[in-house]
Image (cartoon, rainbow, N blue to C red; front, side):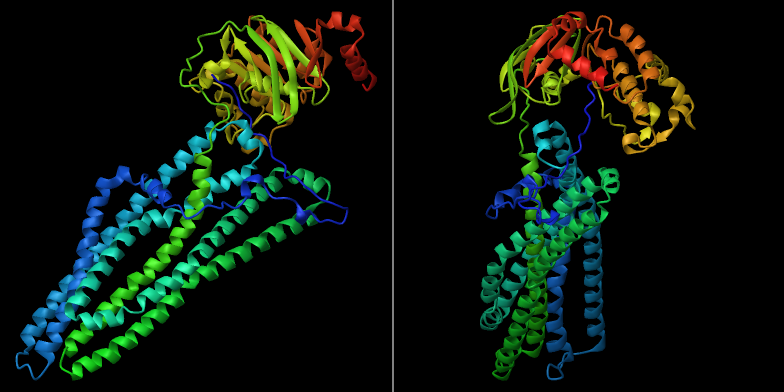
Length: 618
């Protein structure tokens, strides 16, 4: 039992000056503005909170990481012993048995290192995927709670890219990045300590290039971050346009605008490629910086190291170990450079994700909100003023009292405020001024779920989910039995056409139910709403696409179904509204007439003009 919320379609707006301006010059989506914020380290902590539930599972991973790092740092020490003590003929202590023994120890160390790395990679990937699962769940749950104003200014494709692409961009960070960061930091600290312990002068000499590398890489940091932000923004626009194009394909083909649409997509696609190439080029610049720095450091090592060997300050074995440690030093430096680039990509995505998560619903429950008890159905609109945009009121002081069980018809020209009244009653929006009462309860002071579970909404543009016919009807009340579903379908005369489908109630329909006619989809929407058994029923042009014969049957069914139930109907057909207890005539956000059909006809006012216009064009 509950309120059916239908997702609306968002059309991309066009803003041109002069007839020669191209479609490519349309203004961009509001949410696609670049996020101009400094690098926010607190966001790293915020991302880390998603890993906290898995700290115990990370402990053995960290232990394996430390074991693997220690074995890697130990191997060069054995090389010093082999070269200086076993292979050096002047030492006089070399023999094959000792060499094989030391070689066996090194083999065992390599096996331990391989096993620990395998364990680390496997379980960091498992934990990382769990973190991504939690983050995507949180984001999806949050956007379901956001108000209609949020979706009014954002195309569906732009929302989609944040739940998919932006979350996916964090996978590398969570699956390998965090643990690799710790491993590389430990390895670097360990190598620096060992190098300085082996020979301070040689250690300082080979690391003299590190500050230069840090200065150069720091200068690239901001440029790379904003470059990846731009990539995410361009990808978001492409997804939004793809969603619009697919949803509006019939209109595109009907007006033969395929070439123009393709031209616009090519323009967006080219922008995306340019942004990606720029970000990728900046990202790859870390590699050459590190390679050049490593090459200079290696040259310093062998030049200065050979001098120290001639002066008998160090041995050949120590120089080889130094070279090995230096190789192991630049490897994590390189990974840290890549990690930083990865972090910048993750920051660009996390900013977009947390921007949505931090978005507050404009329609929110108060902390003192209570559940609405089972209602009779009295509804009162008390001096309601509402603005979709500032200083552009859609409703101007609407006051209306509806008794339980009454049927109310809302009529008026397009834009007069009919749908707005219903949106406020369902609390998709909150009034700018005034209040709405149900059985004396201000709907702002009750929980949204308890309100919407007692309100049923049938819209003209009904939404059919991918799945079976049975599941689409059951969406009105998930615990409904198969018999309840059949009875609801029979009540709205949907049963006959359902049984003519290949698999009856088990027939699979795709998203939006395109295999069904508009009238059939509306009948399913009727069955869905009636199965929910709401105490207040709203029909928003619900019979607009149903043939006259079927509508007459539904009208007969509605007489029984609406008995004792408060109902609001938006319709233009006389057959739908003439039997309403009260007809409310709206014009530019105000009630200009109200009364029964007969009284309003006799009044010869706005309502009578609407009816005459309807018959004039029949």
